[in-house]
Length: 144
Image (cartoon, rainbow, N blue to C red; front, side, top):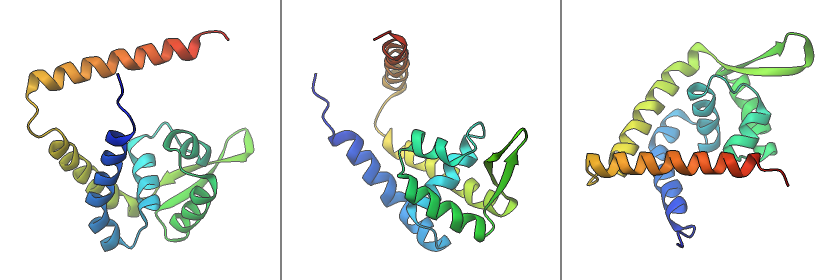
């Protein structure tokens, strides 16, 4: 099997295209929007390191964009109890309307992405992705 890099690349480009009008309207870069959506959609992840590791956004871009989002009132920094060197990033009330609109945009994007795919194919796709995830976990847990 050779899936190549074209499909993930096309999905990423299509997502960026769908996000662009909202980002322009809000005056946010795609990276700033991605950071807000990541934090808003994944409340268990709360720090810049998580954004770098999980979203694969370069640390310098995370730093610059988080600083701007804090300055503009979309994020706050909160010290972690027991370790004053660590801070958590939390979405503010001001960010809620953006993340809600972003979720609607993401829902619409996935509806378009899965257009012309019947329920049986979607179910099979979900099952295959679940198995691939489990297989990936097994590989990651193997001792070297």
